[in-house]
Amino acid sequence: MQANCPKQYLPIASKTILQTTIDRLLSHGQIQQVVCAVSDGDGYYADQACAQDDRVTRISGGAERADSVLNALTATIEHLGAEKASQTWVLVHDAARPCVTSKAIDDLLSFCQQQGHGAILAAPVRDTMKRSNDGTNVAKTEPRDGLWHALTPQCFPLLELHRALSDALAQGVAITDEASAIEWAGGRVGLVADSMTNLKITHPQDLALAELILSSQEQTS
Image (tube, rainbow, N blue to C red; front, side, top):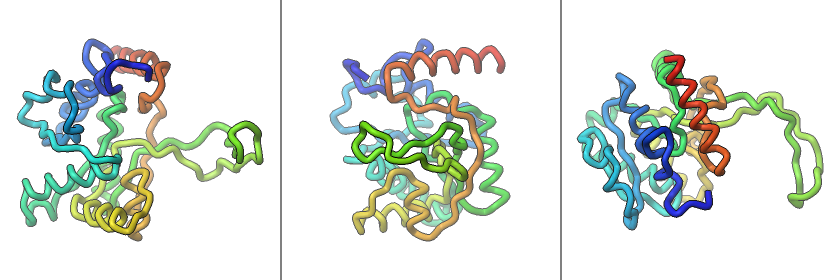
């Protein structure tokens, strides 16, 4: 991102990306608590409003995304206790996706409640997909039928996800998102259609686009 701070602390719509994302989550009536994985050497989090919010718990992040998620799940289980944890579902969300909507979360939670298993927000692939073997030339065109972009939140029973992640990491399995751990463990993962406006801020141009999306969402809310 060519910034002087981690991207989650870049300003967007008068707040940081992180604060905007957490506010979105906490504005949903069914989300009771947010557990935020933050690296131990982070010098920015303490200045965020969420750092003073009783509904937000900071825990130590890990070397990789999966490690951070596992740390958060472990802390949640320890806080809730075994009985309550066995009845709890969790949403895992990227801090760099501040444009997620309450409707998308509603749709995701409704699907999980009706189907009885976990699911992810996702968007169907619309573009023609090209495969390259050298990063310079096209090797072939891949069929896009049935392909989806995995988005977040991703929603699963707390203990099921904790077990799948723990086992996968212990066996050296490459985990790129929570759904991949559940898939590896043999669990079911549903797809709940969402819009690509639920983008992940990765490049500088994404920040400007996210600001436009947030502004449009505010005008139509």
